[in-house]
Picture (cartoon, rainbow, N blue to C red):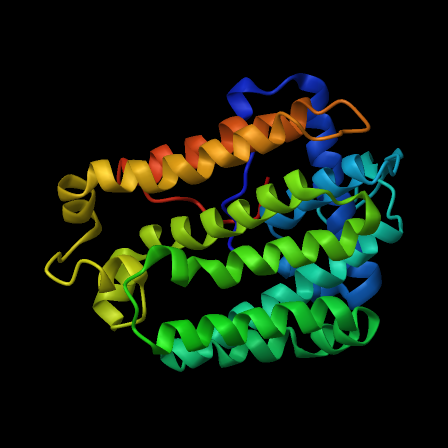
Length: 288
């Protein structure tokens, strides 16, 4: 997806740092074994968190073994063993990466090389997970229609991404998905879309790409100016979404220790929001 869903590392327990790195590396291996080695470049923090989140709620025990990897080939490191749920999320990671590239091509005509880079892996993922592909394709189509309308409504614009996250989580968890999980997933999807839009304000303004914050503030020239003049509105918008996520997270029926999940949902998202509202450039690299 976008790479904003991260841990708040200074406030993590050592055990959770090890678990997160293991899950991140396990998903990377899962992508490699399902969709090919080049598809591993699509790995994102967002999907690593989704793997942690769904394994916990689905009561799928995570087995960690010391293994070699392409980056650490000389020394074994703790890596989560690839299971069926990891494989599903690996396919989803590739599907989302391809559609994001396709969205970039539609937006500004750029990204065709990157899209073609993932095309073979995407075809494998599409065959393996037709339902997840259907969800992502439909919601990206909905998003395109919303953007074509040039609306300045934050709720309308972020809705397709929220619904997509909701439907993806429901597909992965099945009967173990309840209303609290769905509400959390919807708001997490909204947050991802909106934080990306805010972070990309300057780029989208310059390139005349659709951006809900640009559309709703046509008189504002830069992100810095937007944050200065609309700080209270922005804090209210993101605060409402983050508070809903925190409230839902505190009532979920976790099967295992949820310190890591809480770190991301209650601290990591807020830290990312704070950085961007302070007009700091968010690092979206996928390296942990």
